[in-house]
Length: 173
Image 1 (tube, one colour):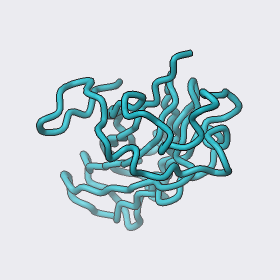
Image 2 (cartoon, one colour):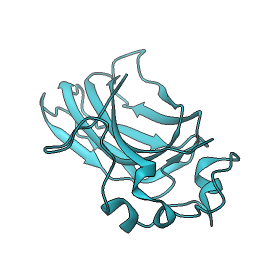
Image 3 (cartoon, helix red, strand yellow):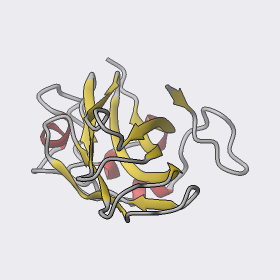
Image 4 (tube, helix red, strand yellow):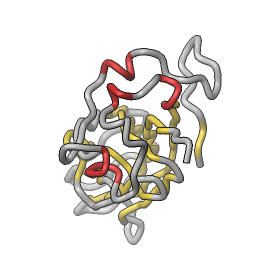
């Protein structure tokens, strides 16, 4: 399920403004191919600084994740476009039971954990509590690739809503 992330004063589907070109690209190597897989993007674009702002659109992906018995898994969210995971927000919707924390680990389509991409929710955290993470490396998702979210908790119990803010890279191919 995808819904646009519309900020105050921003229109639905509006292009991200200049702060995008000010950000260095987090890569696993020297080029986009490292983060986005074997599929090539235009040769003139090697980093996010090379992008014209018209190539990026901000979107928000929302899903429910469970720590209940038999429901803990690695969720895979498919992206039909190149994307960068920029922020993750998590809100508790059912109190985490038991005596240990729950963790959500975010990985790119290659299965590599995103740097700063782990959210830990302490045991007995109340409904409504908010947590966030800002992945800074290994956060590129190839076109037709997957963002993976692994939910883990030793003593089962609890649910959260996850919001993933992505920058969607539009190419002309």
